[in-house]
Length: 472
Image 1 (cartoon, rainbow, N blue to C red):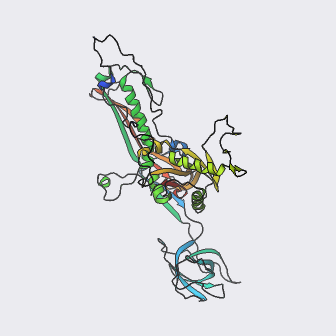
Image 2: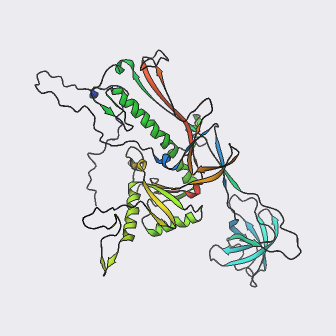
Image 3: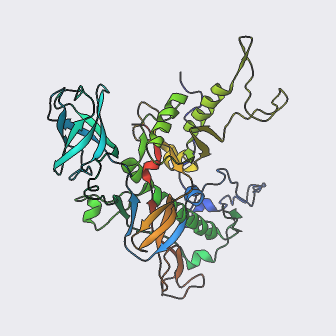
């Protein structure tokens, strides 16, 4: 069924800020034969409300200085040992067998003589338990099975192995060898973000006829004042969206050839090291059970915030509303959710702020994903929306990591921004005026130029605890 909301007239996407004065800024109807003068409002109408989209990182993250071109940190590896691509060289029924570990990235197994292991057939689920009697090479180990029937699966069957303990005879020596902690080292590099607003001295002397205001409360009658403030607001939005969308410059790419490094933004990191829901929006309890099951296998963070676009927000509301309805005598009754003691004379709250299913999930609308000038203007239909992002699950709280620059363990929010700074230079948010107008006296340029600069990157710690919701 076609949508009843017509495509035209639509919303306007062009920004209102102008770098020069246009004739549309002023009254041009000076026909003296007309006895009627226009009746004008002296203050512009804010038809798009609050147009800024930055708030996400302020809600979930923090900012802290760094004095290096690169930020490095170490994240914990798994405590226990498990391999999922293991095959036996022995036939079914054998009392002993030598297994080969072929897991990706494994060059030396962490299995030692005397340890007890569980070995399960990946396809059928049948399993054996055994004790390691030898480790012939870096990727092989020999097991003596505890079961009288011997090996329960055929030769070369792909299996999963994990260690559950050890056993030694009386009066024997201790465990041979030891294990070193496995850390994952990650890094990111800051990027320089700039913007500028310029107005010439002559136009600064001309007073406009409309009172202007911006989201930060600035008001005035000089026409250039609005453009300067909107440039500042736009720059502040870019400080956040650059941290969300940034990608590293690939080798041999055009950006790399031009000398650009890029950076690892939140979406890039979660796409590559986190969890991805590829079905757009989870719409049922079973969908969320799948997500909870994945979180169980990760850090199992108790509280999580889901930043959602409007579609995912409605799907969660609808799912919870269906679960929260009830029947009486086989007849569906009015929903019990919403304001307390709902009745026909009260407003019904059809939205939910959160729910608990294994973990606590708090829902928050993300304006960035709804704004038509940003990701909200991208294709959002399931059939053609490959890659369209509908939400992001962010674990709440902080985690402990080893900071390579500081040389010690530190508590950090899962998401935080590092900006370049030292005793002599702070590049968190720099702004300065150049030219010869507007009070500046730095050059012979008959203009005022307002410059903006920041150098920063975002650190996404424990990306395995994040979930990105997207199509495809």
